[in-house]
Image 1: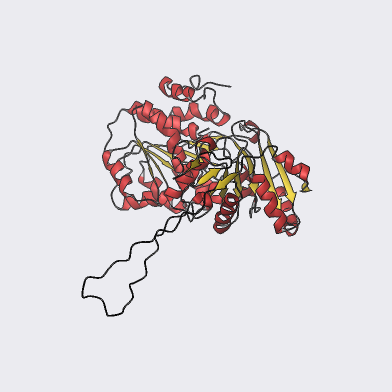
Image 2: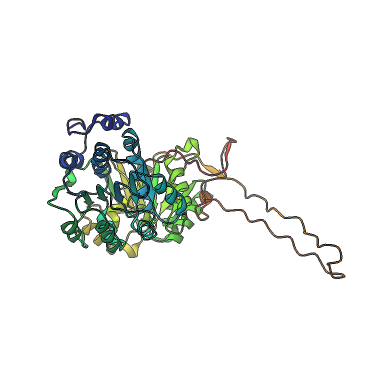
Length: 466
C-alpha cells in the first residue's frame, strides 16, 4: 500500500483525505496519480467502487491550485463530465472539500432544475464545473459558460455516457476545450465508441486498468431465490426489506418502484423511491433520507430503477435485491455494485419466478457469476434477515382542508342560485408513502415515540469518492 503523500499528493490535499480516514491509496489511485499529477493525459479503466473519483479529483485540484490563475466569470478552468445528476452531485461533494482547501470554487450544472442558480454561480466565478452534457451544452449555446480556459477535463463513466446516447454532445464539449489541456478519461469498458473518443482527444495517454482482484471490494455473496408465485414474491420482498441495515431494491419500471415503495411503507417499512419521473429536488430529498441515520429521520429502504445503478454511492448498503431481474448482465453488475464497496461485505439477492429461470441462468453466465438457483425456505430468509427493524406505523392521512365559500358581491347573484361548491385544498403526498417522491414524512414509530413530520432531512448524503 502507498500513502497519498508518498504518491506526490500535496500535503494540504492529503490532510483533507486523512481527516475523513483516507490515508492509503486504492489500486487505481496508486497506479494513476503519479502520471495524472505530472500532467499526463490518462485513460483509466476500472469498475464502479474502484476509487476513480479521488483518482481524478486530486490531480484536478492540484493542477488548478498550482497554476494560480485568477477566477473569471463564465470561464471555468476545470471540467468534469458525468452521465447522471446523481453522479454529478456526488462527484462535486467529493471534490468540494479538496477544492476549498486550495481556495477553489466548485459548482454543478445539470437539467431537471432551474438554470438561474447555475447562471448566477457561473457569473460569480467558479474554478471547477461538474456537469451533465445536456444542460452544459444549453448554457454554452446561451453564452453563459465558455470552455476556452479549461485546463483539465475529466470524463467519468464514459461507457455509461455512450449507453445514454451522450457521445455526440460529449464530442462537441471536448472540442470546445483547449487542445493543450490535460484530459482524463475513466470508463469501465472501451466499447461503444469510447476507444474512438480516447484516440481523438487524448494525447499520448498513459493507460491504467484495474483488475478485479485489486478492487477494494468486500465479500459479495450472490443468492438467486426462486419463488412459486407473484404472491410468494411479494411476501419475500417484504421480508428482505424489513432488516435493520440499508438495502436497495431494484425494479424494472418507474411505476413498479413507486408502487413498491408505497406498499412497503404501508406495511410498516418506510421506503423512498428513485426513478426518472421524479424532479431533481425530489431525487435529492429521497437520497438524503436514504443516506441519513434512521434515528435522525432517515429510511433504510430505497426502491429504484436502473437510474440508481450507476453513480449513487451510499455507504453501508448491506443488501441489494433484484426484485425484477435486469434485462442484461451489465445492468446486473452495476446494480449489484451498490453493496460490498470499499472493503465492506454485502449480499445480492435475485428474486426469480419459475418462468424467469432460463433467462436468469443466461444472465448470470454472461456476468460470470456462479450462484445456484435455490427454492426459498424460512431458514433462508432468517439467514438473510437475522434481525428485523422496528415497525413504523404510517401517520394517518391529513384531513382535507375546505376553503370558505366565496360570496359574490351584493346584486351579483341570481335569485335562488346556489353558492358554488368549495374547492378541496390539495396537499402534496409524501414520497415516504410512495407517492411520487416528495420526501419522507409522516411516520410515527410504534410504541408512542415522537412522530417524524415534515420533509426528510437534507444532511447526511454519503458522497463516497473512493
